[in-house]
Length: 320
Image (cartoon, rainbow, N blue to C red; front, side, top):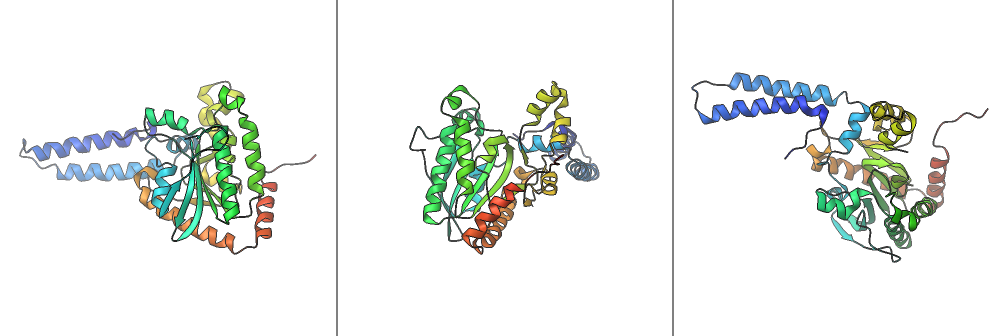
């Protein structure tokens, strides 16, 4: 069953009318042709879709980034890479299913791929903890990244999380320390590192696998220090301010590109990546191949220095 977002309802209503007309005509109960009406509604649906999806607000893009039918990390891994062998566990505590990773090949090139993984239904969401990793998830990611560094394998990280898990267990096992260690150690990796924000890019949970030489983002994904809901609760003390917070945070792909926080936007089909995962995966594959080629052409020292400079130069500030 197709999930309909609030701003998609005008399209859904037109689609319902179209299906009713088609069913009447197919039944043959009336000796009347509805072809002209069907053509008019189909044209209206196209126009409405283009109008809505060409003028999305920041909050609407956040809703689209959270769409329950949107492709997740494992979907892209299986579409982009030729082979994937998942590895498990952090060798310290447990295997966090919210963080996946393992060896992969891309047109014959060996890589290490990691990413946050959400679930499709209630059972899988419990297993994946809604894509919010515990400390052991970040420690597993770092174990795999250090393995990649040891064997000279480029790293590709897929980011899709509302944030790291904020529960008591995560605090007891030092979630802040686990993310901080990843930030430090990723800066010191000698192999090329790419990050792709495919849905939600929330807070330190996203940055914990996002210290990369180049960061890409899908057209309808977002990347932010805090969720719009969290920002609205802190600054305006009201859930009604969520759209205002989303706009103020400047978290959409085009805004992030203008701020030089991301390097490239990967386009999506009209209506979101869920309407064409193969199309998005093919574009993503080409971007990854091109980016890796440019990074591998650099010396290790130059690449590490560029990575350091990239993060030192982020943000805009004024000293008084």
